[in-house]
Image (cartoon, rainbow, N blue to C red; front, side, top):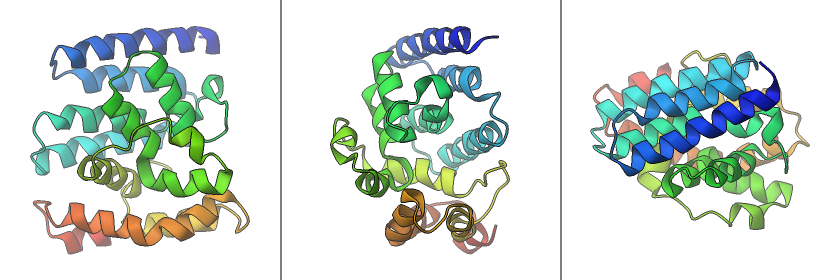
Length: 213
């Protein structure tokens, strides 16, 4: 399937997702997964990571008893890295590029904002000179952003579970010190760790076990 047809398939699926969420459907995460798969399944590690984050968000939404917001969290988790898909790259900053695509195809603004702001995006936007572009999206509720970010930060680049500290460390190793990602993660680590602690406090499992995974 060509990139153009993948784009059209994802766009159609997102419009369906929007109708599902507007109608209160509980199957919206399946549509979010399908849209992400259309654009990311050929990207190897990126797709494996997204699959892991989707699975983590599903577990977290169940364990944290977030109610109706669980569908929003699950959808945002599946879509959080969709901005890496080559047809969507514009600014080169995947949270903004992904959020723009989702908004253009009618995805509910809460999901859009979670994608835009996930995992310390505000810090990286500043490093890239894209703070105004990110500010085009409203900031989401911190309690939901914490959950999506926790799912991302407990999933390695190949989709395997890892602790938040391990994940932050591997990002810093993977990106050179002069890259905006490295600088942003260095600056955002304290707030990311604080958010992870807030989530871990409410998990069914012992937070110490979560930290050691």
